[in-house]
Image (cartoon, rainbow, N blue to C red):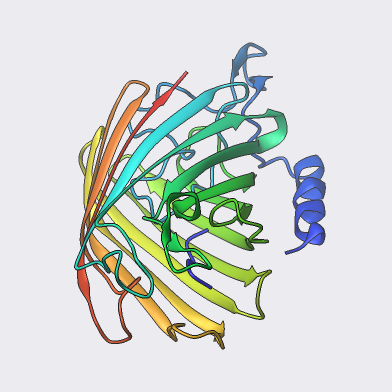
Length: 286
């Protein structure tokens, strides 16, 4: 499996049952305040920390749901060195831009889609093909637990389908479970992912984690990392594991967020080799 960052219908069904039965669910639609009888937002949109539906790093899928009928647009790019040039067996780009859009739905659901440009794979004729460099993805996620304030323990799950290019690649599916503990002073997150490639028998598992301290409510500094372990990896060029890690920063002002990671990665490199990696993203919620 080429990538491990982003299975079953039973998981989604179970999440839906939880939505109907648990009083602690984070429905991002409007609701009535039980103590006052007045209408209030189920998920506040003016949280200076960005809210549980945001993440301070691209390595982590938020546990929280985007507020219902809100739209969040994100532009991003990765910067890697060294990278494999076009003449290599698996060419990759040193600068990899991408974009995504999220739409909040009632009952704690969020749907999203987008693409990451990974630099272009080699076609059957041995030529670098731009079409093969696009990596579209589609994702549905559900917030299982979480206080409407966005603080305390948050739990969510997501199902992501992604593929490389438009040449008939059947793609891969990933199931993730995300847990976060959030306070105004900081937050912690842990995420487990299992993925299956439909073109081969490859499968992998991942563990993502981050810790963030907020200098002020709007600005956080911390660290983040990701470990991918190949459960089945029989294809030429497959690696048994990949690691990403680095320092992160996140700034939120009103409905705008910018974030960055500076660190290193083994993805796209020969096993045992480690290169520099930078990530940058900016988002706005409407």
